[in-house]
Length: 596
Image 1 (cartoon, one colour):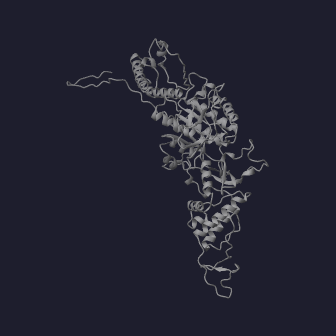
Image 2 (tube, helix red, strand yellow):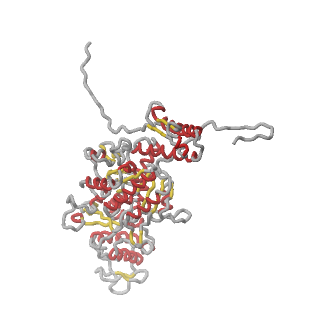
Image 3 (spheres, helix red, strand yellow):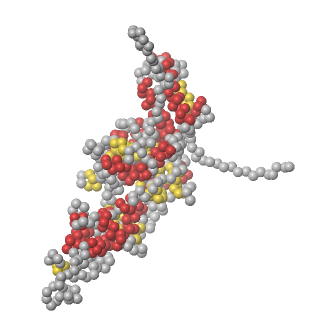
């Protein structure tokens, strides 16, 4: 309604000269779903199955804690799984991925993880931020302990997390690194299929997927059956959902876990494996003789003072007695003499040795550990062992490397985020390296990638490929729907999501506006202005805007009179998307010298 002027005077009007603008939505905001140490917001609010947006690794640690504690022991290399067959058989898969460890440069042991299933979310988050990640969402589906026992990944937990993730707008990727730790292929396929359904339902995000079983393989294993099993699981969903997922292979051996984080609390003792008890008992004794040396003996009264036969007793400053020193025992011996220790040292030694003899833990929990109460921390003891025990550093390095073997999803979320920030979502997140990557867990030769990248029935899997002199690079940029000319490439799918969600969000303000020509012109101008900026940035193909995009809205072009009567406004947007130069063909020809 026009303003009615009743009082004489001068009135100023400032009509808008330009239509409302469209602001592009965020393109690189992953949602991580998995198990956390705890889930409590800064205001003490419970975050279990509650989406939490975080901006940094420090904020993640504050709200969700750190990684799960893992323990390892050394098994004889000859037959680590006690199956009566040597471990170098092609079908012998037990923990061979952890490799060999040598304490003395001669005898090798296999490093074996004990008990608790390794959970990947914490270290995957570190990998995400190491590769350029920024804001993200985290949904905790449980802690590391359930009903007093270490948590075993349950597919239903992940399905519950996905259901929560569908309920809010914001994420543009979904990753579940802990899904790699599910008990079997069927459970993994269930989670993978639901990830694709969830992303297709919301239409604003993509699933970052891994190949189950690859993390337990070694370079000499045939990984093709694992890839085929993954594809079989994806085929549970309709093909039109494949465009919302991208898979990467193989798992990554990274340096994201520094050796400084590993200490003696990461060691376990297998009761059936004497080398662990012997080596660690002797190492503890050697360290404690330096930490708690026995005081000089008081001169005893009597004729047997100073007897050199080693049978006398020695008084201590507290009046207790200890057997004569037998030299501490040879390395590897469990008969350790405490004669070189003070009384406090004896107490500490006993607490450690008893723990070794009666528990799988080398050290009890810090709250009840005598050594900690006496002033020795895990880190201090680890440092002393490193300095005094040959080969001990090899153990620390091996454990850190073991914990650094991670699925690709965390790293790829970071790479996508970095790619969007530096080059734009319309560029392929490929032909780039991965920060902290030591090497791919499994080798992918050039001819082996043929079936990964261009499979006969679709479902491409992007390879992490190692090149001589160039390092390991992401060497693929395809969605699972690799046979579709529309949605073959990740950048096309993600750019379209970016345009769709940006326009949709802006047009929310136009709902219930008059369905008239004036509104149609406003909507068309808004969208054209946004697309022109995208084209100018290189996000659309074409030598001119008219070649890159076209926006139509109006009666007789996109709408009928019935549409107007029914309150329907139809806008048609045509885009010419940017696709990658995936195959570069060079043709060289020779020619004869031209005649004079």
